[in-house]
Image (cartoon, rainbow, N blue to C red; front, side, top):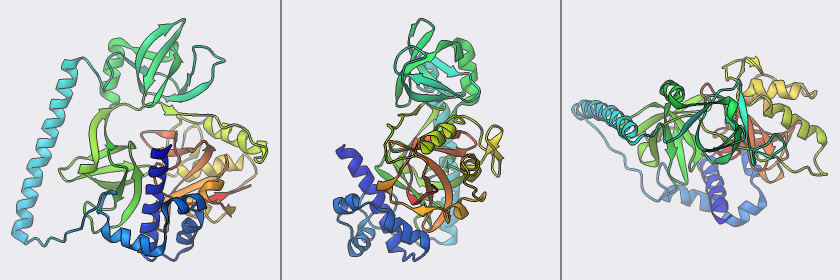
Length: 385
């Protein structure tokens, strides 16, 4: 619990630093300040002066202290640096191949010794016990990998990501077919190894901070580099300091899912909406798409789900943030919308499903999935009904 409070505190401190330090006075900037719960503010002891002082003392890409250095480079030095970077990039590729070779020699594939891959249209329920009536504790997306621990009456006991449970064995590919499939499906991922880390617009510390990502979050690698790694976060690309991530070949993993207990303060319609949204987990992400089955983007997803319950929103995340009423993160209810972006700019939207989780159309790799609600910094939250 203490670690979770520290992480949550770090996220909101970083958010306040970004907003207050840059002097943002937009509606969204005001919303995020209003959205921080009183409990978190008391815990952090935040104030404008403290936030500004923190910005002075903080390192450019993590919560660690340090100072930013401005380095002037001559044209000749720049050319020499470029040549050096090319050599380093080739070295990174060679090292990556060596890692793959070592993994094959050790008998593991993407970290799995007894590999299984989900073969379903969208997702497979992971249950607490082997049985159709057992509690659902996670969701294993199509093409996701898992470690098969045991077999029991037509069920596999598996581990995948942070989920351990049981899945129907009929829907899991194993053996040599799974190994061949893994070669096609695996991607290079960057796992955050710092409590928080900045995702930047460009590979330097003088550019815009797109957002702040939390520890253990996995980001798809677009391009590897010695000092900076280009990554994809939801539907946009950015850069992360290579010191604060660890690279590895990965398959998609199971997503933790904990059903929210019903509350008398929350209308039943909201719980029904959440279940409707979750039924599309695993379906594809398509930029500009509006089909819940054939492909949607983030705002297309929220637009279509809300429309099923009589709430009609435009197909644009920033425009959707102007609808409904503002709520703080401490007041979130299932069915509320959470908006993400950089500063006052909104670029992504998700549906809150309770227990600190969201469902959203993330990117072309993951499609519609369940995530931690604070995997990146929220800009604002809105209640539609």
